[in-house]
Image 1 (cartoon, rainbow, N blue to C red):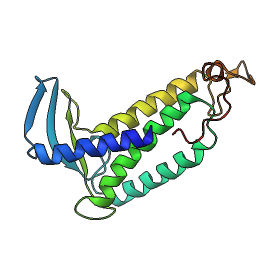
Image 2: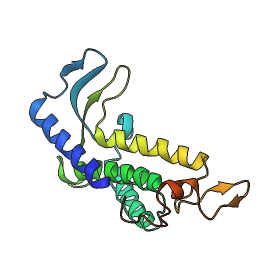
Image 3: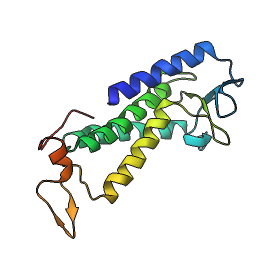
Image 4: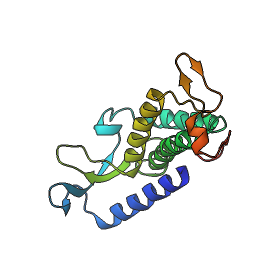
Length: 174
């Protein structure tokens, strides 16, 4: 999942930098979806534009934590969610490391725009989907290992594991 997200993110950013003019809108679905190339030194919604180096370090930490957590996975749904986060973090980290103005200060390529919404990219979308999945899985009481919290106790096999074919580990799927 992570490799697919990162590859798609980098491929679409490469396309955007070649096909779009910086700042000009190109309607895709009228006003609802437009392509608009921007280079973002900050975080989501262009916040923290003077903290590019710090944001790069945070992205490195997120990648390391995701890789460490992958070994504890026992749920396909958590593997997908963690893979989305890891792929998105790697996609934007790649920009911060390799794009101008230089390593750890590179600007992230954004090119997707919805009405009344800041310009974003595939990596940002994956990170947002991962966050929603984390909330959903947590509210459902599903743990990373696939067990389910139930009325203050944990069941040894969750419905998630049953759907996953009873597997107890899906490490490496993030």
